[in-house]
Image (cartoon, rainbow, N blue to C red; front, top):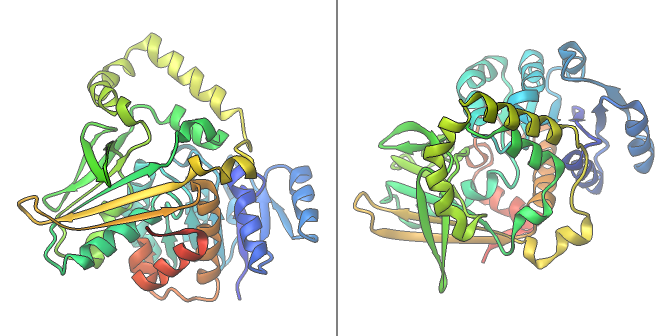
Length: 367
């Protein structure tokens, strides 16, 4: 088996990935910029190999992997820091998996790097965590339940409580630096860009109505590959409940504000302050609280908007889920169990049955 390298191993998500790999009996190489923190983490797992790598020195990242290895990248925000690891993997012919939730980075992986990965005979699995594996699975299951008659799938991401109370420093930094970035949806077979929450969709969840704002994700790019009848795929984030409509209004105002010099400077300063806080996040007890549970709903409909099928997934908090899914994907890639090269979605990489089994093992299943 080729080696698995976790880049950003001492960060919050990186530590969760290392723990999940160790639980599988895998001994990954730990990579990051702090030798002391790497040494401490290594000793916790019986002396794992370590390597110093820094995004500002791309050659150090390139040195982490060789042909057929697996590079797990947890170093974000990915639009700012993610390219060195992605470039290193493609240049080496190594497989790559990351935990981004940034729509712009997802588009870059599928667009710019997908063909290069095919030529290098390696696999790129971007956003392989809470963002956006559950929606791919739920969307594929809903499309299949519709018997191939669905042309539209809409997916909503929710939690049982308020997720903003338990965000990691990395998530906060991504949100702070990503203000004003464009999300996307597949509309009539074309990828369309729009500001976050420009569209709002209300999902029926039992007796509850859950509003959610347009988010983006891998689903609009990947689901039509496994369900060719789909012409419209959209992903929505329902973290903000009743404030979602205010975010929709803000989607018209924010593009103007970010171009205002004084306000733009304040936003940049806030982003830099968020970036300075690293490796922090909710502890195990906070993550296991019921309020942190993940809920994902996918609705398949025909061209006229008639609902044909729906799937609801429920599971553990997004951080533990992400760590376990990244570890599972890396463990599948290392022995070469994915034989199709390029930028892949979760379902076209592994198939519905294997992915559903992996999600169930990780703590997410049909409710």
